Amino acid sequence: MKQQDIPCILMRGGTSKGPYFNAVDLPTDRGELAKSLIRAVGAGHFLNIDGVGGGNAVTTKVAILSQSDHEWADVDYLFAQVAVEKELVDFSPTCGNILSGVGSAALEMDLLPTSVGETPVKIRSVNTGALVEAIIQTPDGTVNYAGDASINGVPGTAAPVLLNFMNVVGSKTGSLFPTGEAKQIIDGVEVTCIDVAMPMVIARASDFGITGYESREELDENKALFERIEAVRLKAGELMRFGDVADSVVPKFGLLAPPQEGGAVAARYFMPRTTHPSYAVTGSICTGACLLVPGTVAGGLANLPQESPAPIKIEHPTGAIDVVFDYSVTDGEFNLKTAGLLRTARKLFSGNIHVPRIYAI
Image (cartoon, rainbow, N blue to C red; front, side, top):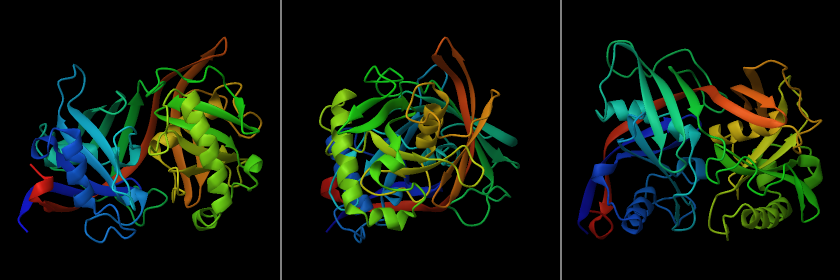
């Protein structure tokens, strides 16, 4: 079988991992692009044995980069969530963890020049339109991956990547509350349907019969929980104007509980058919906003700072994720200026992924 060689960089971005491509090396047709990504990752097998995926939704993610024609941005970032056990690709969400590696990958691909010291990379999310500035460490004019920064869910330390998110309220739907309500009842459960960086359905863990402190493994074994979550999510997807979301990962799902370790809240994030091993970056921004906006299901659960910018610590299965919100609430209206957080990334290898020629350009 003849194969097509497609240049890529395999990177860990935050607590996720996957191949990063230059758009010029991939098909422009979405259908053909999806076929190439399915074969590259090895989707359709629980181990992704015939590709570079890792058998988990956080290791079957793809970033596709290109120079941007946006007046503010340097780089366009198209995210693709490739399924694990099905031959499916979802282009509707974005991923903030994979975003953590976009700035470094863009510099490695020479999509923009590198400065000495630090290099700011202005990124436009093609999936949502969000604008994000990533500050990349480039002490000698090349990307540095070594450093003392650490994030929960990743062993060891690495160079810090600072991310500042802008224009993320109503990222996919155009409104903070896509249903028009801060909270509502779906299938007998009170939920908040909210869209900040990532559209989510958020509820209290206790209303789903769990504490909210369970491990990822405990939650993934609870099939009844996932059946109930999916039933609510499907109905919420209709109410949020996404239509039938049975084959989509949007909206994501989050369950909240009071904090145990000094944070603002304890939370579990669902992708949506498995539990996230830690917490998604965009999910943390949406969850933090849910805590700060009056009238949501988070009312009475969270331990919140009174100042702005407000540091919000979200406790998750492997530790916590910290997000700083520069925001205001005037007459009940939530205004988010920026949401910032620290991540790390590391280049794992660079070279070519080999894809059967019938699936590639």
